[in-house]
Image (cartoon, rainbow, N blue to C red; front, side, top):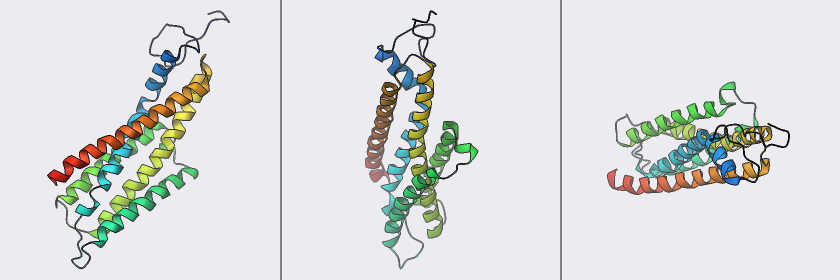
Length: 202
């Protein structure tokens, strides 16, 4: 490749093809492919958070004298635990969560906890208010933690790989951010649809 030729962009879906920074469709295709795992992690993280939150009123308390207070407690537990998860992203992180693969593992754990939450609602577990509050708190903490780090890791990845190719870094970052925002909105929409179905089934 001569010095006047545009080098291959890392991870380009069309291997062996050259393109210039003006080829926005190719840049967009590369960005979407490059951050696919990030989009999955964000989608299922947000989906699980919204979907479970709609069923707090269905959670039965173990205390017959506290028939309505548990749902409110779960709501505020999720609210503050989610905030705590976002704040914790400013602290030193364990090696496991310093990559998107680590966040993917956390997301899988989050989905397992979502299943446990609904099994609890269906009375397949003994009623214990402390257990369900801790469960909701852990889920919300993971959601806030993952949501922040996904955006951060996408920015780092795109900046690094776009800088190695003939690509406008700001353009690539803009495409990546829009893709993550769309994944966020898709998750909200999917969770709302599932909520409507769940109301009739539970």
